[in-house]
Length: 136
Image (cartoon, rainbow, N blue to C red; front, side, top):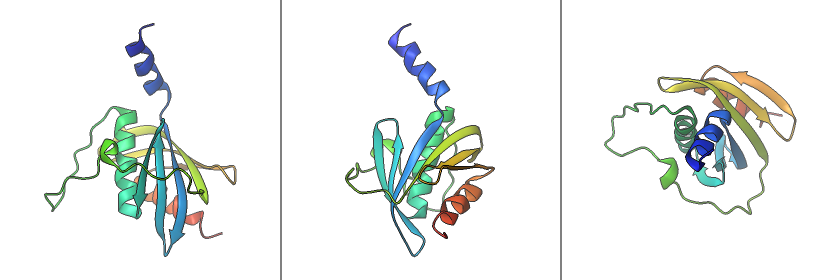
């Protein structure tokens, strides 16, 4: 099997990425999204959501059209700032994308520290699941 075929096969088989949250103050997440070996930092829900959307696009092979009132380009996964990998995670989530359509996706989220898994049906439900981990 050629290298290109191997990469395409890995991409099709693995539809998961990781969110490591190192801080969650006043419901503002701070941490790193990992897609393969690439770690991209974020601060805030919108920054996290933008990175999650880009990761989902990469995994699903779909480029969602993002509309905006602003002319500023959204965060691109490859443009995100590399973070300090020494920051300890207070919560780590494995997100598996099962279905992508439009500007949304469905899948499974696993909270690794608690070994708990839930399905999500939308990006909003996914954000609510992440937020609920900090209610305990």
